[in-house]
Amino acid sequence: IAKLAPDMISFDGPIRQIDLPDFEEGPWIFRRGDIYYLAYASMDKTISPDERISYATATSIEGPWTWRGEITGSAANSFTIHPGVVEFKGKWYLFYHIGTLDIGSLKGGLGRRAVAVEEMHFDENGLILPVTQTEQGILPLP
Image (cartoon, rainbow, N blue to C red):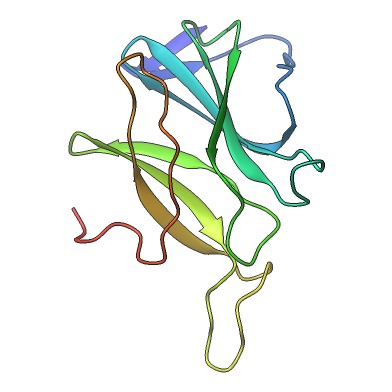
């Protein structure tokens, strides 16, 4: 493990597999305080044919990872959804994509992903509270 910057870590060694419930694709790892978070696109076809965003936590980047549940449900007009999480000016934001962007007379669809963003909150134990997707996103902009 090599430190690149205060919050950046690089690994040297074999690829490791992390087994997470309903993992599909699009992992995003971030750290808040002493907790590492791994958000990812998940799919349980007994619930829905669409991906959702789930997450796990760990006290070390190397795990072990504990599955914590779903952050948000499926994306509007798209069966796929991928997460991105950032902190900006002391607030946390969940970025994801939706399929609702119209361009001229062309209606939105899976192949025309648009970025959406919502503010994300944590409980007193550091667990992510469910995020409700809205049409307007964050207003006013920070």
